[in-house]
Image (cartoon, rainbow, N blue to C red; front, side, top):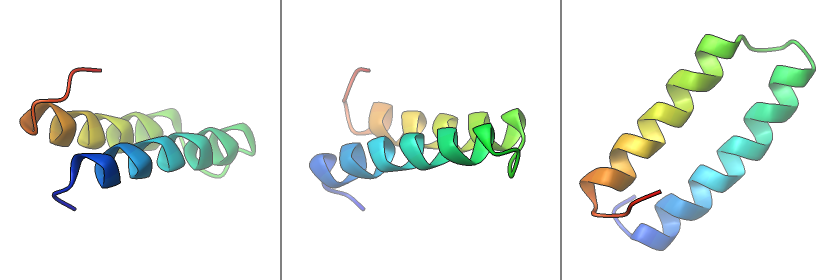
Amino acid sequence: MENRADVIKAFREARIAGEKLLSQGKITWDDYAATMAGFELKLKSMGVSL
């Protein structure tokens, strides 16, 4: 994924899915935070500020 729009779309989809899994107790907060941090780092490396 090198296209900004694709990464932003994936970030939003992962956030929604992650929040759902988190609320169902299927993942931990640490798992969710690590996933979101990974997307944030990718976007920052592409010059996108959140």
